[in-house]
Length: 517
Ligand SMILES: [Zn+2]
Image (cartoon, rainbow, N blue to C red; front, top):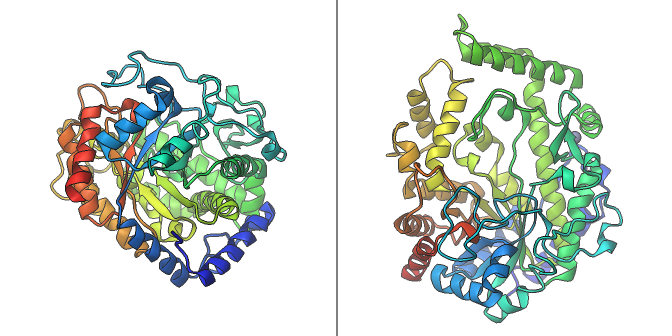
């Protein structure tokens, strides 16, 4: 199946060749890849994607995120049998690189083991779960990244032929979860906070960090018959982090990134006053401390914060600079894949916060992201969404919305985000969010991209929550999948990883897929 007619294919290839040929420095200018002047003409993108969508409608796209550990523990063929039979799965999103537990390894310790796989917890080292071809890392400062814990098992070479034989596709899935202690030279690609401290993630503007990511992607796509790629860049900019707009418990000590030499130089070239941005963030950090610790300021929290933003517009300029840098990396990875395999389907996992925080939602503009994507996966995780949204609300209530009660802040968020009929703050952690939330977020994303790319909502199957909080039930999964498809999604991504899903819950997805087809 060719998603593009001949003429578009040629012009698209020429455009993408252009991206890949561009030296990194050229990409750091004002005209980044996402800019209207540089992207594919909207008509061309929409035409190409409408062909993709009409073809996809023949068969719903049912993907599952899965790590190598499950194939090793359960056997490749048996695992594929289970995925097809229980989940109606036709696409593997195989975790090829991570140092985290969210996408690799068995069940997270402390959570009950599911009804399949080896009944014991494991330790993970992390790294690459496919063979590393050194010639692709000549320009990378990070070289030895093969994960040791699964021996010679290769999540691509050992699975793709067997999946293909069944008509299943394979996408490479990777995320920004690093372990600096296990990655020699990590300091050369690390982000640097406002105090000069090296962080646990990479700088988005550091040429070595970009080369490292592009080396891995080029290696995977040159050596394997992959159908697609999905990257999880689960982080946000310094303003959102500083005010605690997150769903983990906020303690008022966010690290403010990135102020490395590359970022400072590039921001200055873009006309941002770096010294003022630094001063602004120091003042913002101070405002957060005072707001958390002191009685209400006479003018209230919101007014004093707004006054600070008026005084230091550079705070917002640095935030914008941050997420535009992230979008440039999306563009680079997109171009890297397309240069090797123009037909591979490249897309982005947009972290769960996009359904909770209006600040993050404003930055993650799907219409703009669609210019360097073939699909977008918004995380519409409704079960763990309950406790996560409740904690998010408590976090932002403690800072920017200090003038209101937590209950009022939640109601206000429901209105801003467009959710109706969801639980009150007391009940939210145990009730979770509804299937309707999955539908609302799916419809919103589809409207935003105007059909330019397919939207594949992420479906929550047993994403860990505390044992006394909302836990996934088969009916939740079935309702979420049904609602996503009825809202117009041509596909779904069952998340986070097969190793933590109960088969009884996975079967909820399979039931929905069968009923709808
Ligand atoms: Zn930097």
